[in-house]
Length: 361
Image (cartoon, rainbow, N blue to C red):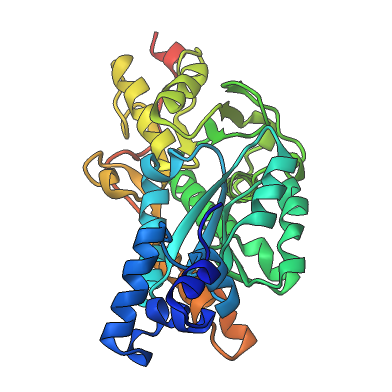
């Protein structure tokens, strides 16, 4: 049998609390007694009190659970996710707290709910979870743990959140290219339909899109286009199977190889936009001259790529989420944070070409 606290106490001839103090409150014991307890524990093979049980007794684990759907590697490869986690980690470090990354399997909602139910954390940051998965997140409520969302929709439930106005941000981007004369338009989104590969996607009802970010950014573009007299059904929406550069290039191929190719392509992330730029170069086309391209996020490589994009404060967003969880302000209104965005215009956008590809031929 594994030795326990009681095993050591019996061997030394002291109480359980005295043995516990040797590990957690050494100042309460004489150096000689503590050395005797620790040497006896080592001889018996006892490594000390269970840190998990001790944390639960204190009522604090010292960890924030970060929930997102997808693979664990996403947190270390997606540039925006990295920046967000840096900010969250900064807030956590200030409170001597760690991060527990909890990737939720998109194929097993019950397993995801179990992860939420059993995670040893002091609170949750909901980073990226589809709308219909919020049923699984109801597992948090009975635990009485604080939750901060990263999407503006959480305001409706009165929950803590740190977000941006996604639709307003893309509306500004759409208006920018409308002013430049663009009317043949395409939008590339990711994970528009669960399990669907890369290809054109008809979107009549935005509420059917599973991810809030894709839904709201697409809504902002639609509002900008329709306000300028562009019929929404004439806008080509292409789904990318994943938010990667390669999938962005694959999605762009569905519109760039058409005789009536669009004069502007909007990608809802910078990674997808980088893929569009790759696809343009592969076809001998120039970004900002032949086809304009806009991304979203303004990740570190966007400036080097000369990409026009929507800038959002990724590090600040993560940091604010951590502060809300670990040191929430007393006023409820201050627990709902909407951060600003800014359209950053670079060389990847320019005036619409005056002639279509078929007209030039």
